[in-house]
Length: 280
Image (tube, rainbow, N blue to C red; front, side, top):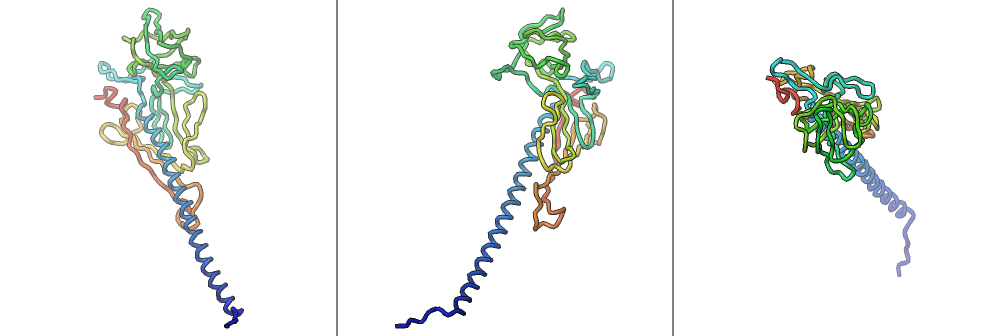
């Protein structure tokens, strides 16, 4: 019977081969894990910025909803029943503020509903006061920060007083019965010094964070001929460019400080501006 065992040299060779195999497997695992983490961050970054830009696009499209500014064909001038408006002590003279790095928009962004989620409508009005009575009482128009409304998206008013479901307005509306009402307010989109994209509605909860790790936010404004413009009432479309980066750098990526970046460009038609306001 052969009772010969394993020699020390054979044992050392086996251990060395095992160590090489384990090191190779470990390196493959680490590389796969790092790749997974980076791709997970890239996906999170893309979802983060797309969610934010979708919300921005939806609200920017509604700038001037409620006919805050309209074009008077007879006089050839823009007229407004609300502007300039005072929101939280800040006065806005245009429904659109055309800055390169931020945007401020004014419109009837919020349809007013009751606690059950049912849209509130106008059930009667008194042109002599003038006032309207709503299908449900609402406190949306209490105070200086929330005193502007639109009836049916066609006329805009200042709420002078509220008594239950009855709102006293600055002037008499035209055939308001049965129409929905919308709350008019200002919204600002910008990137702060901590690379956070924020939405500021100037009332209630201020400076709501929408997306982290946003390096830049750029706007370009265009008139009806497609030329760039900074004139608010001449703007009919705009282009928004957002540059985002991953939360952490990728050690294997040498460019741009190791951060993976994505840039999203979106074009937005302003349906209530320009020709929609009656511009010839």
